[in-house]
Image 1 (tube, rainbow, N blue to C red):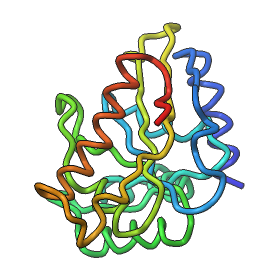
Image 2: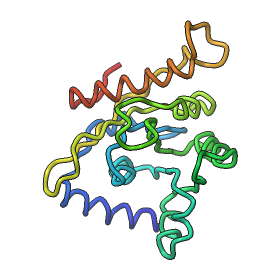
Image 3: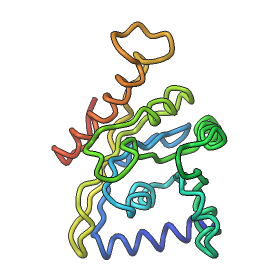
Length: 197
């Protein structure tokens, strides 16, 4: 209930302030585990990725935020879960995998931090491969300038079958899977359209 109300309020705010528009929402599976893999340009990105979808989206958040009065309770109700500074703990990894294996939706930014230049880290691919969740590429286009359009594009899930454990590929399967995801995100950023493959 709290998630629905907060998402509705944020949806209104983002649509008014940033003219937020979503394309390709039909590419996000209606059921089963889904990992939304998005480029990262701003602290405003997590709501952008999730608020226009029908399904609740879970995100990792800095553990310190959960100690802030009101904010901590709010982000907990919104589906965020804590990650300790200095790296993702075993507990956080286990929780993330459980979220995906339970058929829920999780958002992640493969670049790890803003301004990473489109270079993805292996975490997103690892979560997708280990959980069996659909890896949906997401591209955010815009810079959150007031009353100028910001667009979020959802592509079709990336087929990562070729990179599963024991796969016969040349190179590191995780690196190859990561590049497959990042390549789709880059293509959507360049074309402004969902990927079709």
